[in-house]
Image 1 (tube, rainbow, N blue to C red):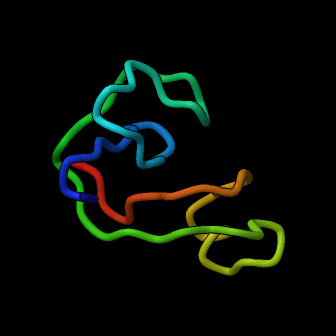
Image 2 (cartoon, rainbow, N blue to C red):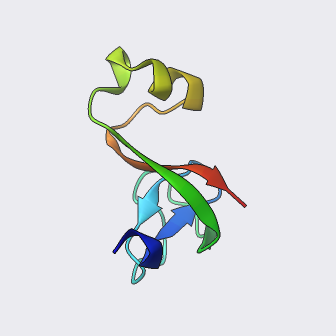
Length: 65
């Protein structure tokens, strides 16, 4: 379930609750306080990825607190 997952405060990547570090940027600053969800498959072709400064495919939170 998405609500059980954590989001990285640095790159907004959504990670599983058993993760200690973000697989995208390596940060240990993870939070349960996030909302919105987007899956980026082709960051080089995505306007959303460009706006969010996402360079790697993955699942990302739109808002992280």
